[in-house]
Image (cartoon, rainbow, N blue to C red; front, side):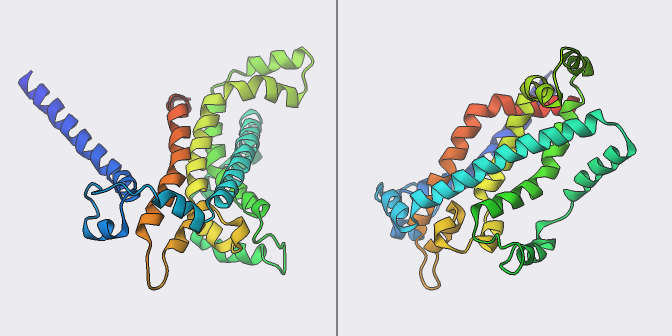
Amino acid sequence: MRKRKLRLGLLELFGILLALLYISPFYIVFANSVKTKKDILTNTIGLPVSIALENFPMAMEKMDFLQAFTNSAFITTVSLAGLVLFSSMAAWVLVRNKTRISGAVFMLFVLAMLIPFQAVMLPLVDLFGANKLDLLNSRMGIIFMYLGFGSSMSIFLFHGFVKGIPVDLENAAYMDGCNVFQVFYHIILPLIKPISITVAILNGIWIWNDFLLPSLVLQEKSVRTIPLAAQYFFGAYSKDWHYAMAALTLAIIPVVIFYVIAQKQIIKGTISGALK
């Protein structure tokens, strides 16, 4: 009994230390967002000596925050809507049509998750360049790219969840006169809500915080996302850390709010998908 309590105590201590390790980057960002530049350089990990709330309006003005936020929100929202809709439809079709072709297509999606972005980024930029598709510096162009890169993992998650949905529900709907689109909209879509939120969160955090892909295809100031706008606080000879930390804090807040609201659905969807 005493050994068991000791083991549980050690596990709790390990969990607390691990949680502190994960929380530490957020603490550094939030604490430094209200410090002056001098305080950051003299004591990076300490608490702020004085609260410099003027960092936030100055950061918003310097990075044109409203424009960058609008671009990030539009790109993330449209990309997530497309990923959830098209990936769920594709996963449903792959699950219900059990043939060698559907199995091969699903395996291709799974294998695509193993291909690193760095291996395809140069051919991608060349394909979307002015001499070919001419989709650079376009919000719809980068949305199309996110649909391609995010579909593999999304279809994989939806595929595991849809397998647990009884086929009898769909057959009953067909007997009542529903077509394929009505069955998907009225039967499948409501049932996959938990995993849809999980897919939206996972892809949303990636798209919202992504820097590499936007840096390659969004060069004009009018289409920059928040990560791109934030990099301009770091020049060749000076670095405005206090403004950059304030900008990062503003960028983190929407994702944190979305995650807190939907965390129960995320856990439910992940567990259900794993079990099914």
